Length: 467
Image 1 (cartoon, rainbow, N blue to C red):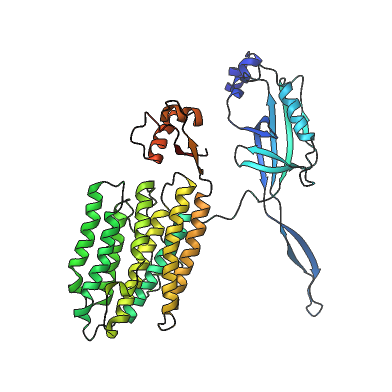
Image 2: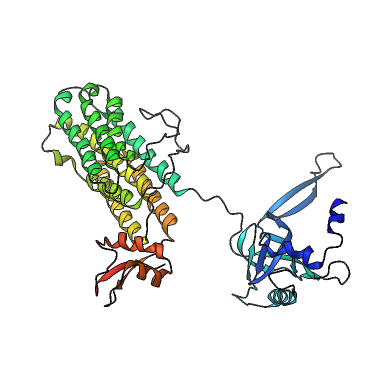
């Protein structure tokens, strides 16, 4: 009653000014209206059948069962209104007529009368009006408002789609599965007898030195983080002799060296996993693995990924001659190290904040080439060594990595060449003229590695984004 008292005596203008905001704003085929209530129907088409029980059983009960006839279209029952308010100058009739026309028009898109419904709860939907819309107007009770009752049915994909896997999580899981397979293979097949201690130390150090080379080549990072990562690898190298007689400890030492590069983009968080204990890894196959979801700056991400891919691309012969007794051991070391390097390249690049599709595709191509080289080596190796599990894991990582990268970054803008005008032109004027945004000047400077942003090279080409 207090509300009624407060409203008593107000003019229509005073009562209706609340409607000038955007709360509940919707549209159909571009005709705007407000939504007061919305119901959504989802599910599947079913047919209920009733049939008598078998005559062999004495019963008076019938047998009731439901038959699934397939997917059902999502349905949206909308109660909307068009009202006089500040935005329309307290004349709602043009908006009412526009919505009526939108409901009556026939589009004949592939013989379907479809239109775009912008729903405040579900976003843009491709729908068709089901039956007739009802319009209610009153001269006595609700003056200045036209109420619509509309039922829309959705075409194409349902709004309540199956959950799409997170690209970062998919790549993380595939990469870590491959690394754990390499780890279990290493500890199961490594030979610890003979002259093992005296022949592999220098070669394992050489593998770890490749990680130091990759870390040192990362650009755009703070020097202290580079040094921290390098020190982690150095500490691992210093401990090699102490763990040579323990394959599991040695394997984890090599993996720690390969993981050191994650310190640079801040990805060295906890890995949540557990499982059916396998060899040395102790994982549960199929469980979700979660790394911290940082966003890696483009310069750090691209240089780290590319250098990991580059350093991983070597063969057993890279370290010179080795006795036949230790050849298989060295292969196991290299398989694990290379898998870890490429796995980290995948996990870093999927988190990289790429500025353009061209940059993403370049990194994708380089990491994929490293995966292909490893697959070729493992495939040739499988003629003599039983390591089919690792071979399949790397193949799965390749497929998941390419799919996830394309899904995550398919909407990035493309780069194109722009010829600088003969007159003096700066990044600020170009940013304003091309993007109507002065803040894009820094992007132009960075993308083209310009020494002086005030003056662009007259007559030369610079790279710009398509949007």
